[in-house]
Every structure is written in C-alpha cells, then in structure tokens.
Image (cartoon, rainbow over all chains, first blue to last red; front, side, top):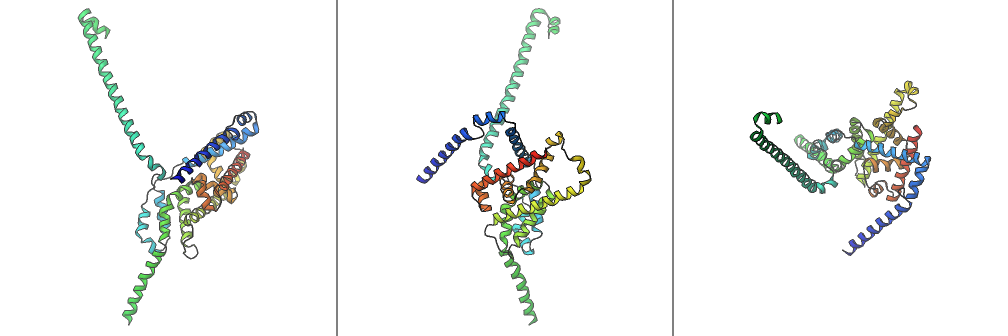
Length: 160
Length: 185
C-alpha cells in the first residue's frame, strides 16, 4: 500500500517536472514559438517532420480486410507439420476474426451508457418536436375559427 | 511376428505425430496470441494483403524451424523481429521491381507535382521507401513504435535496449525521414 502511494507520488512528480520542462525548454515554450515564427529553416524542418507524422497517420488510418487475419492464419497453418495442422487450435485459428483492442474494453460500459443517453435524447427531441407541431396546428385551427366567427368564411379562407 | 511388427509400426506412427504436436504446439499458441498485432504491423509496413499473408507465413515458418524446432527464449521478440525483417525485405524487393519497370518513364517523374505531393498514396509509398533505407536499429524502433503501436518499454524488451535508447532512436529515425522527404521536394 505504502509502495503504491510512493509510486503515485513519483509519477505525479515526474509529470510535473516534465510539464515544467516542456513549458520552459520544449517546442511549446514561448521563446521557441517566437523563434520558429521568424526562422524559415526551423519552419522547414518542422513542416517536414509534420509531413512524416501526417504520412504515418495516413498509413495507420488505412483499414485492411476483416478476414485478413483469418486468411493469414490459414496460409501459415497450411505450411506447418501435418500433426499441428490437425490440432483443434489450428482449426480455431483458421476462423479467427480480429477482436476490438483490449485496452478499449474497459470503456465498453461507458460507451454503452453514452449510447443509451444519446438514444434517450434523440427520442426526447423527436417527442418535443412532434408536440410542438401539434401545438402549432391546434393554434392555427383556433385562430381560423376566430376569424371565421368574426369576419366570415370567405375572408378567413383568403387569410389561411 | 509380422502382425506384431505392423502393430508396433502403427503405434510408432501414432506416437511420432503426437510428440511433434505436443512439442510444437507453442507455435500455434504464438500465432493465437500475437497474430492480430502482427497482421496489423505487417499491413502497415506492406500495405498489400497478399504480401501480408506471405510475410506472416514466412515468419511462422521460420519460428517453427528455429534451431531444429526449438522454442526461442522470447517468442514475442523473435516473432516481431523476424516479421519486421521479412516485411522490409519484401518491401525492398517490391521497390526494386517497381524501379526496374518504371525506369524508361523515370526521367519524366523526377519532380513531383504539388498535387502529387498532397496525394496520400504517394506520400505513403515515399515513406515506405525511405523506411527501408533507414539503418536497422532505427528502423526496428520506428516500425515497432509507430506501426505496431508498442510502448517504449516493450520495444526495449524486444530489441534488448533501454526505453530511453528506444526513444532516442525513434526521434533520430523521424529526423532522418523528415530530411529525406524534404530533400525529395
């Protein structure tokens, strides 16, 4: 317990140190920003590093076929020894589909809750708007009746 | 007598595959455990599904034949390093082949147009080509960090270096790639 507490203290100290250092000597520091704004060479360097990061994110964003893991497993298992190919685990590998990342599994409950809230909001919105419509129609009918009573059917028809 | 020999023979036939399956079942376990991450990394390095399947097959074939079928001390490290090397070799072959085929028209495409510069596919191909030209120690860190999305401590364990060194190597790799991509302009 004490070890855990000390570990947390270390972590918070490290984070604070890192933030303070970044603030004063990192690329986000004011003097660095001012320099980059006026230095074409640094601008060029920063732009080309940005280009590399952008391209890496392009590569990461490109999806592959859902059955790629299954096909890769099937091809790899087909060159293993006969005895291994007959194993039930090998059969399971041939039908394996990619799973969502383990690290996002803990957010599953929160995401479910959020989706439920969104659905309720959507339903409420639909309900509110349909009620508004009915109020609008009712009001219009009341006014129509009023005009019919006071100025006559012909003139009321012209108005509405 | 003959009947006995036949029965011993069939017993032996049963016994050998059993022991082989038992001794190399860890290959299937490794495939089960690391397959998904490996496919993801290979896909990002190669960008071609058939090449991914070939590299994946090659990796596990090498794993199964490692020192006559023995299990490596660190299976994950072995698998990822082998897959990385196999994929880079394939990528190099592909680049060389493409260069060979497009040599007559190469003179026309020396300077990329601004439209081409912004083309995501063109950028990806250019970056892949430069990744193959990186020194091995920098390339390994870059692919494990940026394409396999591993933490520095895990990369350190796989490559046998400290997390700090991995961080420095990755930074150097990005700097080199940036210079090369800038030079292209």
